[in-house]
Length: 407
Image 1: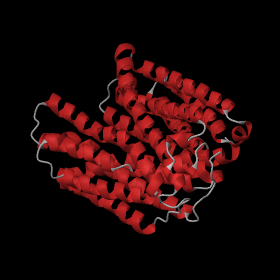
Image 2: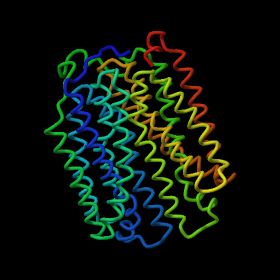
Image 3: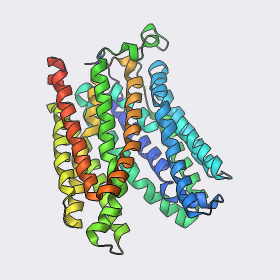
Image 4: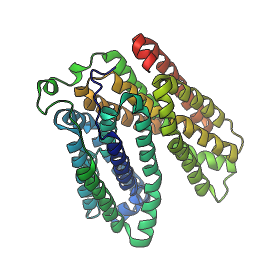
């Protein structure tokens, strides 16, 4: 259990502000995904292969700098306050995304995408603040609510971006992104109330950091588990469309069916996040995590042999339901092992670990799918979630008996 159990008197309002702000910023971040190749083409890249390459580079650039800087922003949040970090992230992202619409060539586009990742991190900062200031017996529920808001933003963003680009133009879409994120900045600046558990610059804060983590092996194991689970959640996404095409025999509605399948998975996660978080707060975080991973393993294995699109789509929805319990329980468990002045740093490492899984998962899926077929990707991912289940059970067994009962 963490060294301090202090919570913010305004934690419910802070959760609402962070959920709304995370939804808004994620919408802004993902709004550009369907229009990125169009924008690359507008910037003078004409070769189709080069358009694809530069689009991928521009997309990945933001996540690269975000992964590298997440622990730094988390550590600064421990020292100077987490609200200032959210204000910095929302204002910085609003400016960077607006400037992206003014890029003159593809090099400037990539540079501005790097800047967006460097200055951003609102959703990860919100996770840290909510984890740090929510009562421990409500932490998984609150993190589930926040996780659902983030997932909802990931679903709504591309739909909104494609609509704006088609009706008003790509440059207007970038400006709309900046405006949306600026709204999150205003809400954060004027509505969020942070309670500091220690004065800024106090001896406790100055001596925090990794040295202040008392149960390093368990924390490291949880960080590794976090990367593994993001890896499993993301790995199948790049091959969904190809697998749907295989199941339907190449019907002309492949794109629509793939989009519906994606949406069903996200809908399952959005619906189950708060519910599984509430159960975890009562029954134990790692117990619910183990149940979620066991269900996900079975469902992913069944997807490898699903004979037609309807059963496959139903299994994807059920997988989304199972995965809704993963992020809240992992973050809540890590939080309980940390003193207050190390929460931001360590959860920043958790964000970076997640980005590692987000990058590695699609790479493995592409290799396995190319060699053994798309069905093998689901079987491989099931093996990964099974490994995560074993890891979760081992971590739970290694915890002190008092902590084990709490998790």
